Structure formats: C-alpha cells, structure tokens
Length: 599
Image 1 (cartoon, rainbow, N blue to C red):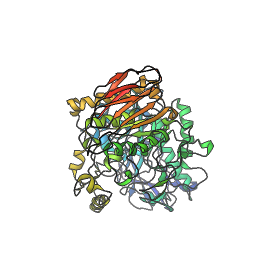
Image 2: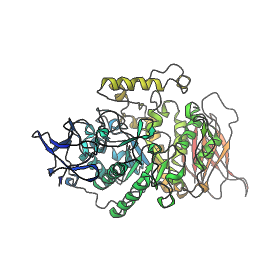
Image 3: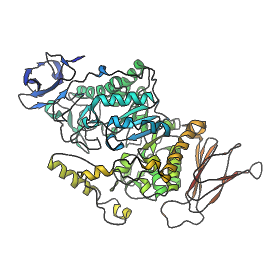
Image 4: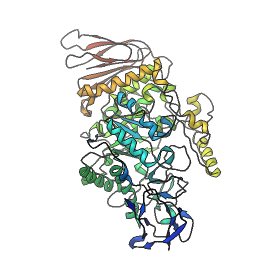
C-alpha cells in the first residue's frame, strides 16, 4: 500500500510536500474546502512533511508514525503489512467487564508496548477482561502521562511505535483480553501542536481549562470532527482496538444540532457491524448526567458506558476518612449507600466543592454496568500531591474492604496497575519537556496546584511536591514486579483474584441490576481514633451478601438472607451461624478490618 499525501489546510496560500530523504519540495494542489493533495504515491517507510507558504517542514496531523518525535517528519506506515493471528476474535462487551488501566511507560522497567506483552499473562491469571492503555498518542519528550499528546493518529515512538501496538493487541486477543485505548480529543499539548497554522482547529467561541476549545461547531468544524472520528475508526479498523476511553468529554464544547460524540457513536456502530465485533466507547465526564448513555435516536451521545467518580469518592472517603477538596460531601455510609444504588451522589443538589447545584438523577432503568467505577485510577493517585496510592495509608484489611466494595458492586470495575497487589511504588506526575520555559511553567504550576485543598493537613506538614521534570520522579513511578511474590502482596493479589472469580461464578454478583442492590449500615459500638468510618456494612447483591467490618474489633453481624448461603470468600476468616428461627437472620462472625462474602 502507498500513501497519497493529503492535508486539510485552508489558511496557507501554498503547501509543498517535503521529502527529507532527497530534499525535494513539490507543490501540492489545492482542492475544495481547503484540502491539498500531492501527485505522489509514497511507499511504507518514506519520510515526508508539509511546508506552509515556504515555511519550515511540519508533520502530518494524521501521521501514523513519528520516528523523530512530534517536531520531525512523518513516516508512511502500511498497517496492512502486519500478519494478524486474531481471526477468531469476537470481541468483549465492556459493560460488566473487569478493566485494568496501565501506563505503558511505567508498567514495566523497559516502558514499552513489547515489554508489556510479557506481563499480559499476569492479567489473565488475575481475571481481567479489558486492558486499558493510558494515551499512547505521540507527545514531546520521552516520559509523560500522555495527556499532552499532539498527534492522535501516531503511537509514541519510545513506546515502540505503531507496529508495537499492533503486536500488543494481537497478543492480547490471543489470550482472550480486549484492548481499550485512552484517547484525548478535548485539547492538544503545548509542544508540537502546529494545527493553528493549518486552519480553524480551535475556536475562541468556547474555552476549556487548556485555553481555546477544539472547533466542533464553528466554520470548518466538519473537517475537525472528521479528523477526530477518523482517528478512532482507524484505531479500531487497522489496529483491532476494542474500546476507547474518551478523556474529559465535558470539555468537547459542541453547540451543533448533533454532538460530535453522537456522530462518533453512530459511525463506530456502523464499523462494529461491519467487523462483526463490539467496539466500546467509554466517556469520562464530570457532568453527572446520563445524556452520555442515552441513544443517539433519543438525543443522547450513545456511549457504551461512562466513568462514575462519585462511587470512587464515596468508597475512598469512607474507608480512608479523607474529606479534603472534592471529598467534602463524601465519607458517610449513607453517601456510600446512595452511590452504590443511585450512582450519582450529586444528582441535582448542591456540590459544596463546586459551589453550585450539580448533576441529575440516574433513571431507574439504567443498568449499573453502564458505569465504570474504581478504588484507584491514574487521576485519583497521580493527582495527589505525592502520588501516593491508597495502600500507603490503608492497612491490608482496609484495602481488602475497598476492593470488595468496588469489585462486587453492580457496576463495571476498573483496576489501576499494581493496585491488585497493593503496590508500594507511588504514581506521580512526571514530564520530560525539552523546552526550559515550558519545563519551569510545569514545575511552578504543579507546586501552585497543591498550595491548598487540605494537603498539609492530610500529610501532616508542608508538602514537598516532586519535581515533574526530575527523572527520579518518573523512575519512582515504575512498578516493582518483585512485589507480587512477597507474602503480604501475594495475599492481597489472591484476594483480588478470588473477588473477580466470584463475579463470574455468582450470577447475583455479576448482575448490573441496581434494584437488587441495597446497603445495611451497622454503626461501630466503640469507634477508635483511627481514620475512616469504623462500622459494619452489609451489601446486598440479589441473594448474595458482602459483609464488611471496618471496625477494629470483631463483630457478630445479623445478615438477612432469603435462602441457604455459605461463605464463599473471606479476607481473614469468618464463621457463619444458622438462623435461630424461621424468620431470623443468619449471623456471621467477622474479624476486625475484614470481609466475608456469602452466596
């Protein structure tokens, strides 16, 4: 396959095709609607770039391969050259699946897609269904989270480039794992973004935390929308990607009659039919509104699922006792009950942190599997001042309880890499900006960001925020794969395996029916000064029960059940006593800081 270079660039009066290999510049032909096309057929491996009005060479905004980084020329990548072995792959529905979120650069010491392949068997043994990669789109520098990418069609070269992604997807499918890409369409990073030289990719009609918004509803927006939608379709078609986590879609400011996400949903649906396998779209949205899940025929965005931060906040604040920042409205068992049954805690009432009414109720007929929940993720760990994980503050029993509340909830659970064994390595905010001014701005901004929000109180003193540009900050964030074999870590890892297996073995625990979910609350008889709430919770999941003792003393817990049950999992042991009479509950003895699952 060869490439005929094309470029949407309505602003310049002249565009030249630049071939660095022989130094030639060939004028391109202007077509309608600001498109330019070259009289060339470039084979795989050819480097090329575009010059605007005689200026310096710029990379293709649809470049598949940027071997010299985001400022260098593109290289033609023939996706059809790869010999796929996943012909029998039928896909995975992300709803109800267990997703594992990982960052390629810190998942293994090598920090590449190929080295990640070597760890996929670990995920299979854990029981994971979907591997979610944090953004792999090319960004400037070697190390970073990936959310400042500037080339949404290219794979970051230090990760291995585009063929390495094909290899990982093919290997994952061979092991029964689906692959989800985290993609960012709401902004581009500050270095290597040349789109403003080409045309109206951005608009001042809307603004986002990163500045001018991506142009989705102004003049020329049909081409910008096409640029976004085509990138997703290409990942699904040419790289066999199964699902996409769409970053901060509330910042896709679009007042057009048909929201860009609705357009994307319809086009992805057509491709899924053609390919004969599901393609999931999972929205990260801060709106607390199920417009994201409503069908496009009903005026919604047609997403497969959406993240539900409120569930995380409710679990985290209850177990840890943290109430700073956006946790201010969370931390009680009543709030947890609302999150586990109604999803959104802020569903129209006042959000104290935001200082205004927020959200809307989730209709009763919306299945719980439409919401992705977690005890930790890259944001909730990495955006802490020190990048410390829950395990840095929670005892093993607290970690076990948090895992049970998330994995046995009526939602679709997501794990953050290393969580399953209680990784002690932090996951900090790290960057590698070569530009001194940008590097200093990031340092200053990070320090300023953590000047408030209760961090001093949380950490017990002034916070020395790690320098994002210091290589040691990145190195500290790399997972230590010797930990899973150590006794304490191995025990927690086995607990995660057991809980995930129960989701498959017990239909009531696999169900997304929120009508079959309830939460009984038993206050602690004598709370201690230890952080976090210290009572007992009984989570009803159909006829199954998850009994969580967050107290520091053993508890004999009456548990109403409709029929015979047995202990199917226990963190620290547990004794089940039969009911004392026909209408009496069973009683389960639960050790301190422990969990017992009945089914």
